[in-house]
Image 1 (cartoon, each protein chain N blue to C red):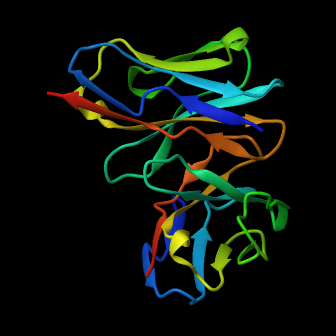
Image 2 (cartoon, helix red, strand yellow):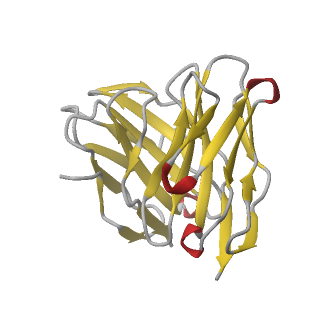
Length: 112
Length: 113
């Protein structure tokens, strides 16, 4: 069965620190990969996605993610976080069907 | 409307009662998904519609759960004979097509007493 693993459940950073959130998935075929974010009091919304092509994708608010097929990974990065990046981040995978499989999420708290 | 809407936003019910949760997707979106999210977890897939056709219901936990989308727009998730373990956030999302970006509604928080 497909699964998505997010390595960190809680991350606390100071402003201007660099961020990397890990995401690994289990599925051997072609995948579509997503990072969604939920800011406090708001809906889940798309941060970035990878379908094909350049494995380094850029999203909103300075976020980027790199698809490494050999490692089944799609880690999210941002060079310098801001207090407004405090949110919960979800990695998601669609592979070979309609089901979207989400990871358990990572709660990021950025100290001002 | 501009986004996906869900109603009610909050529902408190007694064990054994039936509940119906509504999702109104973005106009023109073909695909509609239902998820359940427990505290501290990510959204868990329940079912998927392409237009009015329910193409995957493998995530529905048991036969007390059902969903429909009769005209290919609004969808209803029904839980019969609710149990305390059904308490969760129920999320709906829609997308232009299968495997495309999903747009989520605000969710319905269900509490079964």
